[in-house]
Image 1 (cartoon, chains in turn blue, orange):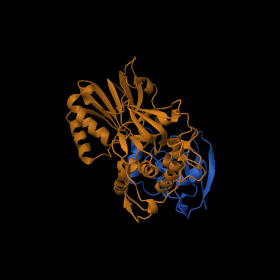
Image 2 (cartoon, rainbow over the protein chains, first blue to last red):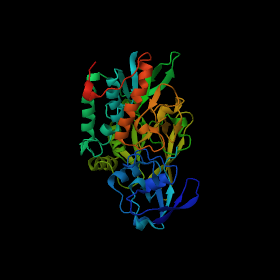
Image 3 (cartoon, rainbow over the protein chains, first blue to last red):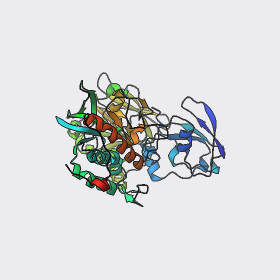
Image 4 (cartoon, one colour):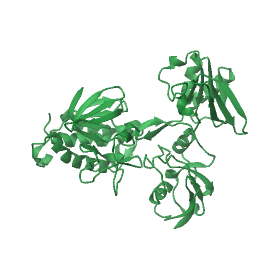
Length: 106
Length: 334
């Protein structure tokens, strides 16, 4: 298990614990933790509703793919460390990372 | 006016397979889809991607699956209204329904099946004050008729292919084109990007890089757009139009206004027959939600089969349904 922090739309931070050996994506873990993430496209980097800003620990995330960058750069709001949670694999390098939810939640 | 037994909203794989299951029970279907072709996201977004979890197919390309489904339902002669979005659903006194599209096409149906998948793809809007106020009064999210912009001042925002393509096109007919993009480079097609830089170097368009939209101005109609760059310096340009091109995002759309129970952009259903809280309206595939829901094509197929068993009572209220296997009865076209 690894631990990282998630900041919701209201700025509340909580520690989330997730198994690091099941090939889960950050989006799946956030949904399972009942965060208001639509994940409309189901993890294909198509809808950007799982948009997160990485506040800390971006070195453990790996590079964004072209499909992901296409989505991110098209968003009306976009931050230097924006990522799609569905494209981030949960692994031990995420220990201690901090994510802020940025996707549309309605 | 189109009359049918079942009107299916959404012509993706699950909507198409529902035609087959309905056909086995002698129910006719009409399908409506906002996209100009059948297949839903399979045809629109990933036609060449292989799918590995369709029973009986170790792998099959998305478009191939759609083509196969069309072949499978051909005996039941479904009819289609494509490129139109259903805006209104009204229930009549006799319990049947009238559906009206944005193009005013009307369909009468005894049963409505919503197989709308991700929903309708709608333009993403930038977070700007008074944006909605200027929609239709200078702010447009797509270029339907380029002639509208002839000899006008246009600001385009975005860095994708559509922003580049329209900047190149409108440079020929508009009075002035300004393209605002938040980065220094474009991710769109390199050819188009090179052309845009060329046009900017020759003074044919104004290219404002590393900048974001900040504010809209105007009294009634849009008159100006203010941008801010990374150093927080502001720049205001006079304009007749602003076209933000930030891609499309799937939205539930008008379905949200039909009195259905909705949870997180999905329609709540009863898993015995995938009926909604409105009698005679069903929801199948990615658009529905229930405990244990999995957004898989194969689950949508299963939902379509159970839904049809239940819909039968609305189409043939006086008949008793007896379940028959296709291996015994074959597929009887109509």
